[in-house]
Structures are given as C-alpha cells and as structure tokens.
Length: 477
Image (cartoon, rainbow, N blue to C red; front, top):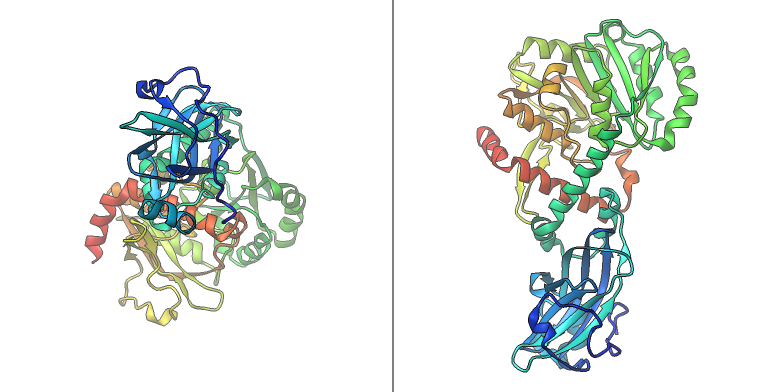
C-alpha cells in the first residue's frame, strides 16, 4: 500500500458539530462508515488563522454518494467544487473494489472560511436516495503563514498536475496570492520608514543619470563593477551610482566594506538600506526614490560594461530618440554568446499564458544584424538587467510593479506600461555588457518551487496584459 494512502476505519457515527448549514445533513440517517461504498483521505489541510485555507487528498465512491466537507464551525462545501485529477496510486489500490470510479480521485480545493488552529474538518458521504450518511474522515489543520511567499512555499507543495496548475490559479489561488501581496505592500507602505542612505565620496551635485543597482544574496560583484566604473571618466562626471541592499543577511558585511571599496577605486556611490527585503521591483523603486538624476538606469549587480562610455551612450541615445520611452542594451553571456537583444512574447499552450523569450539567446553576436546607421531598434520588450528611461516617465507609469511574487516579469510589465503611454521600447545594439544572470535568484529554493513561482507570475502578467500583448506582437509578426 502506498505510504500516502490510509484506509479510514475509526470514524464516529454522527459528527458532533452543533449546527449544519445544509438541512439535508441535519435530517440524514447516520450510519457507521462503510469503506466498500466510500473511502477517502485528507493529505494536506492548512489554514491561515482567521482567514482561508487549502485542502488536498483523494476520494473514491460508488454511484449515488454525494461528498461534503464540513468544519467544526458549521460551514459546508460540496466536494463537487474541488479541482479533481487522476491519482494513479489510488487507481492501483482500489481498482478491484471501485473499478472505473477511481478516476479523478485526487482533489484540491480552497476552504474559504476563517478557522483557528484546532478546528476540525470532516468529510461526509451522503446517499441521495436512502438519505444514509457517514463520516469518512476528520482532520485538524496545520497553521500556514499569511505572508505571500510563506503561503506559496507551503501551498505550492500541495501536489497538482502541471496541466491543472493554471486552473488552480484561475479558480482561486491566483487571486488569493495577489490579495496577500497587496496586503503586505499596504502594511509596509503604512510604516513609511525612511531608508538609511550612506554617501561614499562626492557624487555629482546635479547628475544627468542615476544608476540603480539592487543587491540580494551576494554582494561580491560590487567590486568588479566599481573597477569598471573607475575606468570611465564620463560616467564619474555625470552619473550617480546607487547600491540598494535588499537582503538583511548581507547588510553587515557590505556596510563594513564600502569605505574600503571607495578608497580603493575612488568611485563615489550611495549605499541604501530599506530595512527589509523588497524584491527586485521594490529595491529598484526605492533606489529611484532617493535618486537625483534626470534619467534612471536599472542595472543588475552581475552585469558588467565591456568598455567605458556605455552609460553616457545610452543616455545620449535616450535624449536623441524621444519617441522611445526606454532603451535596453545588448547583453552577452560570459563566453561571448548573445543573451539579450530585445525580448518577444510567445503564448504557451501548455501553461496557457504569455511568456517572455530572448530570440537571439545563445547565438554569436554576428547574427544580430543591425541595419546600417540604426542605433536604436524597436522591440516588444527589453530586459530589466540594464534599462534606461527618464525619471519623469518612470514615475508616470508607477515604476516597477511590486505585485509579482519574488521575481520575474516585472521588466516586461514595465515595458508594457511604457507602450501603454504611447512610447516605444528600444534596443541599443551598440552598447554591450556581460551579464552572468540569475546569480541571486538561484538561492531561492528548489527548482520545482521556482518553476511554480514563474507560473504564478506568468499567470498574473497575462491577466494584466494579455490583450495588449496580442496587439504588440501583431505589430512585430
């Protein structure tokens, strides 16, 4: 017998709940459990206290039996509302007993009622003709975090077949996680704690450009960037550099080292700490909020310019091509292959969402053919690893959206907001940087969790922009 399957054989005859919301259950003829008629097991049951919860398990039943979930507060929900899927382990165990009625035995569903730890959940089987009823199982919930990332780390371990995950997001979980994200953001907005800003050296008093660089998980790349910046006189003359610490784990280490780094490379910069982890969007937005430049350039900490003058070149291109609201650079992998030359959107039929794609990824840069004299090429989107826009437009579109979970799609979301303001998104092939990519995101957990994070963010991105993406891609088809 599989480890996750147990046969219920000790349920009481009638549940002890004092009230039923469903009249037919209160009038039922209660019997002892008959596992030849119905059998089930609740594998996972979690509740966010004073909020909602999630249940998952399996059930097999002979024809004529209705299945109802009932909690100790008197709330009742039909198992017909659950998302159902095939459980091969259940099929193998109960094929002889239940035959074809083992199909779609697995279930997962939300519990929309506020419960406290210690509450009891029961599965009730009810026969519509005989009015017989019995309790199939009972269970108490585990407490689940209402922090959006904490909830996702628990909920995404509740198994759902890959082809059913999008249905789960559409039916309840996508909106729930969005709600948790919004509540967390509202809480932090209400705190309104001023960031700590440490100024190293003497940045330009009136910079043309502010470079915003978030730091998460690792900060050792700062020295490599400062070395490159120190060899770029034009950058030092007109550019403000802002590092945003977005990880409390590295705060002490980098705070102890920044003065040495400044003395060693003689590059003025600001070190900003926002008192918490804000994610890619929040860290960049915080950096922009304390910046002084007329333009802002978002740069990943693992992206490195190949020659001096790159930032001033991007700044000049933005000024001389006013029809473009934002510009991205050409990014290369460390071995020299293309990583980014603009992005496109493609629709995944299996995930049922729009995804971002780098069509030139992995190719030799010689295949990125640029028409003679063209310094800026319109694209559907560009990556946020290196992107420049005016501070005015950045504020106008609301900056990067902080409603995505951990990371992914914030950059294309920003591009679509710029397009919505009737500006173009451009790619500057003459500006090259080397980008290591995903050096901080790899610390977030196992691959399966990261994949489901991507799926949630892709789902949210599609919900927000699906119609506009179709219009954008028609232009480039």
